[in-house]
Length: 252
Image 1 (tube, helix red, strand yellow):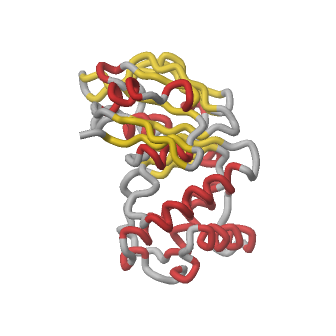
Image 2 (tube, rainbow, N blue to C red; image 1 turned 135 degrees about the vertical axis):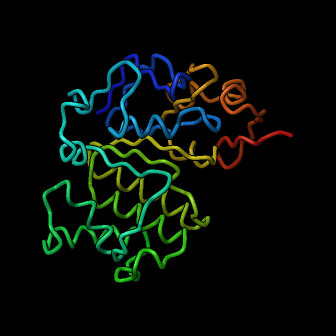
């Protein structure tokens, strides 16, 4: 689905990620972990085609990313930025319908409306369909943004802090919806989450951004351990086994 070869990411003259080799394949959910300023959001923006890498190559569905048109990219890859803009005063339903434009839809298509309403219901905002997005709370806005991404119906999701502003119940609902979404076909996701244990509950694979542009990537059991977490997040963690899961507890 997505292949990175010797990808370099920089801000100005400061390298953030060096020579990243990564393949995201159908059926995989990758979590992206790193300290503040390590390049997580910058990497997602690069994969979304919003900025060019400093070097290397990125292929989407076997074709160089830059060779796809914006509409073709949007049909194959959906991107949720960390911060959304809602300055245009659209309704919730109109906002979610924006996700259908990649498929050549319009406001009046019964098929597009059905997909949008289903996405609203999945994210528990169906009752807000006619509200102005600007009148919503932070958590409601985030759920609307997630509904728009689901309505886009792309096989690859790039999600930057999708649990922002969500209460625990809606965080759990987000996990369930992502699992349901993944089961609908050959799909994959790359997700940035600040909650380590939430990220690891969602993910099959992890990409850890380390100091000096280094990185570590692979299946969660292979790359997540106390040493890698300390190097990645600059904090000591201890594992706790509970209910058949490993929970990582930050140490003072």
